Amino acid sequence: MRADINHDKKLILVWKSTQEADLPIPNELEREIAPLRQKKYKLIIMKSGTEDLFDPTLYLLKMNRMKMAEQEVKAEKIAGQTPEPA
Image (cartoon, rainbow, N blue to C red; front, side):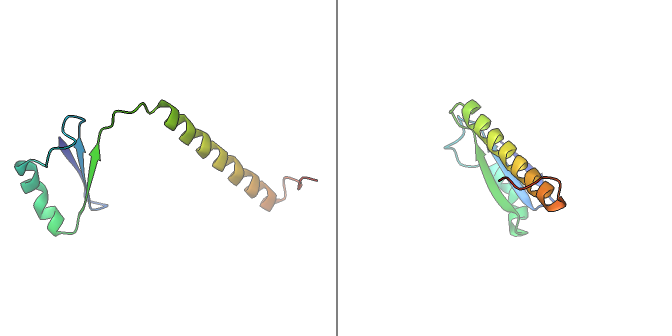
């Protein structure tokens, strides 16, 4: 288990492996992040999963590509570069 601290965004990211997912944050790590939590840093706990991420990642990439294409077409229409479909 490890913690990454982003002072600019006031975030504490605690990364847990699959084996550590159900374990509480160790006391030494809790002592390290306690002062930051008092300063209103947001604690985010990231847990490793067991699922295959290949298909969901492909779907996410496909959706992002589609959104980008829609934005490009919209921008071209605004600029008058693409005629409206009949």
